[in-house]
Length: 95
Image 1 (cartoon, helix red, strand yellow):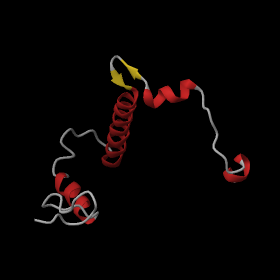
Image 2 (image 1 turned 120 degrees about the vertical axis):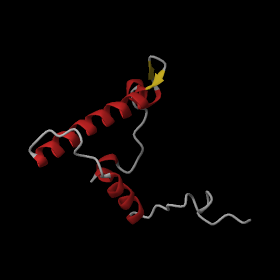
Image 3 (image 1 turned 180 degrees about the vertical axis):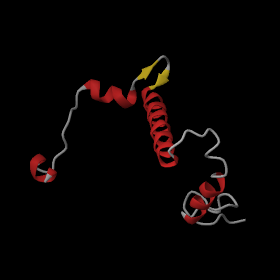
């Protein structure tokens, strides 16, 4: 649908203010860092509220022991526990 609407052409130039979202800075730090920090804080808050709702109580030590679950999720997802095993090309480095 979008290809039909734009006639498969690039839409440019975009306003400078739009480019400043990713390329600007505030207080000497890039805007993307600020946006990332806000997203992390909001996500942690929502993850905490949902967890508290699941337990129906506010328990400060409720997440103790979930480290193993996080490691298991990484391993199931394909991460290696032995560190990186390939080079940038995806192949094993020649020794």
